[in-house]
Image (cartoon, rainbow, N blue to C red; front, side, top):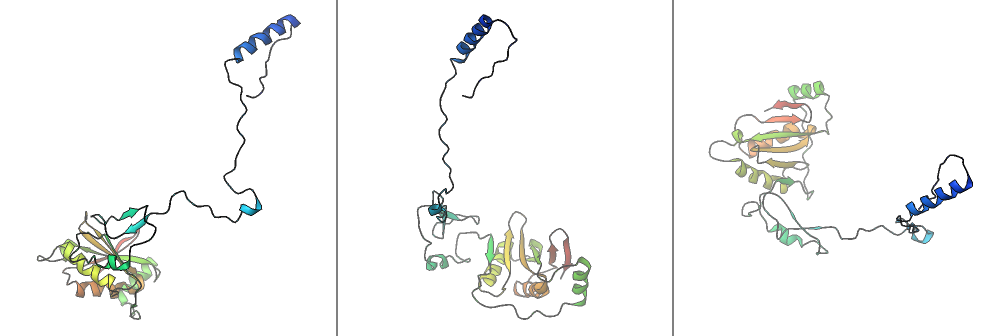
Length: 221
């Protein structure tokens, strides 16, 4: 407890003594204890400065053997290492019950051929919106592009195989099931080439749109 300062009007010594006694009795119920010494959590000696600060629990490990549905992944805090790659490779899109939400290029080989020159119309669009050639944009494929004999899930399976087999290097794809849409992300530089690949390889009908963050749809084919 800190010191208590008592303010009173000047008077006789007897009155001051009585006031002090009353104050002491009022303060008796309050505990008087010494606060514990401060123990810093950070290193305090030169010998401890280079020691890493580690979390109390190990980081969770992503496993492939017990992944739940709807694109979520399971984690295990008890496992100390990842499962072998052979266990992960056996989950193919065609026969796996897992509904993948993302399909990401794995850098296992293959690069897009040197980008063809932009068409005059698309070059004008890029100039008007001042887009950087390495800026990421997305192609939007909707249910209406799949035709009457296929649904969005079947198109997504075909696209996932193309992305994971490095047929669309530098591209990432995401399915928005609540919107019944597939988003394919690529660079502005390769967007026309990727769009033609999607139209031909996936046998899409109608027009697909190219969208940019904060600008919306800027191009279609």
